[in-house]
Image (cartoon, rainbow, N blue to C red; front, side):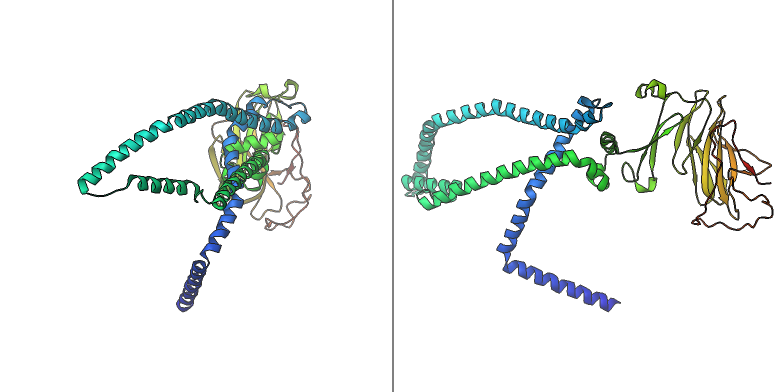
Length: 422
């Protein structure tokens, strides 16, 4: 194995050396290729920079200025994004024009004063230069020619600025052509950058969904704003509020799973139409395993409940306080039951090790911590259990086994059907 690895390293080193020699012999072509590639990327990089900077005023217009537009009209809602983009660029161009109107006149005045004072500056420079040359000649006994030095200095400055000597008409034309080409390229890059930045601003919601790991999705609050603005968000209408769901990587890490948040009618009545936000005093609410759910109850309390499993068995979380109910369980179906007097319980159907049917376990979630309710008889919400349960064949249930199940839906907490297993 070491010999193979050494041989591979030798081959890699040889290939790299050949590559370096190739670049050395073709350095001009290689540099020209890199320059061409960077020139193609330039408008995209500038456009992305523009979009990043303009994202802040864009969010202000989208969320604050036009935030309430189109809540009852889909057509107006679709205009929020273009109006926000137009307003953002209008503000930027207005600021640029204002700066030009303020700064350019001052610059022109300074340039005009500089041109007027050039003769004075030249005379002073020539006088100081004569004094310096005379001192050098007298001190070191040199024979410096002032006129020759002026000609050399002027020629050097001219070549430094233009790259050629303007005494050559062809060289001067080439210099002017290069300046025109550079100006045209700069204008092209600027226009393309504006177009690309508009695309980034208008399509970033789609980019956040397609590339959730990218830097523009790192801020969870911004990602939520984008999804809400685009209307692409999963939600459910619960008995006491509305729950919103966010996939992993969107506003958090994958290991944290799906995020969910519930807006309760009682906590934010201003967000809902009054006739639609009257929570029932008694209700049954089906929960989703692993996803926390918040609910309010008839006595005014509110709680967050979560049902999930670990290596040891089922875990019940009530406002962050966890009850470990050990034992292997599969296919959990939790239901939160709220009674009219404010009491609430959690019914969880699941298949245990060696069971052929789901069994119902009840938890008291009225206090600060969940408590399992002792039961002398075993029940299930399955409605298709064999009549002779005791003699039915029982065996381990595979997790991925596909079975048609008939469950009794719990809709009325005062009146629901269950099957007794013993």
